[in-house]
Length: 180
Image 1 (cartoon, helix red, strand yellow):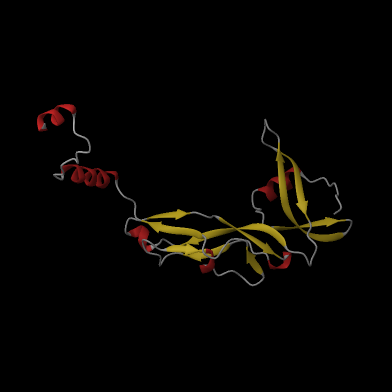
Image 2 (image 1 turned 180 degrees about the horizontal axis):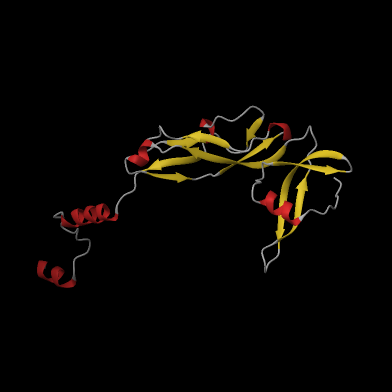
């Protein structure tokens, strides 16, 4: 793989940095030829946090790339309206994909999800040519019903209020003498 150094306009770099993700292709013109490139790495100044170096990757047309595609949840789940909470476990899906098949994001309509619903990798509608690098059973997100601290305390108090006699395992020295 050949390394090429290029200079970019600072204003253009800032514009690019505000709208690109790992899955966003950028057209670079090098020596009069256009190349589809992806942002691979960003180096920032430790003091000012300004961009000092960018690494772009120009993939071969027939080779798969490994990258992370963002998962965007669309809608308000029914379970949230009932007091549930969304636990978004995996925000980006690691995949193997040809450059021509890359998508910006995977959108999932979660508006019909009720409390207890679990969205798994195998449930995602993944476009043709994209191979997830996770197991189909891995959870992406779930709708859970939170347990209020008050409910937990009430349950603990109820357990303590039950009339339960402690089990005597060993008798004390006085009790043994009294029995004799």
